[in-house]
Amino acid sequence: MIFKVQFTTTWSDFDPNAHMRHTAYNNYAAEVRSRFFAHHGFSLSEFANQNIGPILFEENTRFFREILVGQDITATLELIGASNKFERFKFNHQIIKSDGVVAAEIKIYGAWIDLTKRKLTVPPQEMIAIFNGMEKSKNFELIKLKNEK
Image (tube, rainbow, N blue to C red):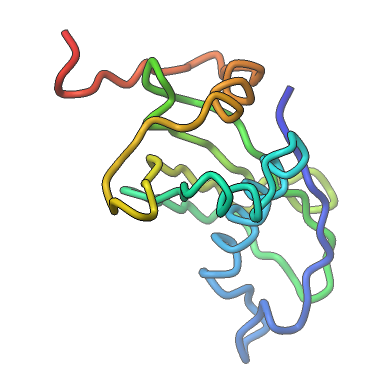
């Protein structure tokens, strides 16, 4: 099941031409990721308690349709790739207009960082359980790490 959150856009999401700012799309994708983990018991404060945080290596956004001021949108999250221990992950997000038309697609590739050591790390067991419970996309990619055969 794809995780979804509905939002109503706000005036601060738009530029003087009444176009949604390109960064606003990415902000909604980040918000749906945050809400997904919180929904599964891993809130922002739990990230701090576990001394872990997400980092992004890549963020690719494709724009398809215009969103207007005040329109309702739905942001989705789908797992499209992960390494064996979920040290690395790939998510696909869609920003969907209220009429069901996909306005943008955001693909991210990220990892987890130990906030003290400032080094990449394996996520805690609670987070691994969240990932194990996620439905994988039909095009799911197993991410091989350099030290794996």
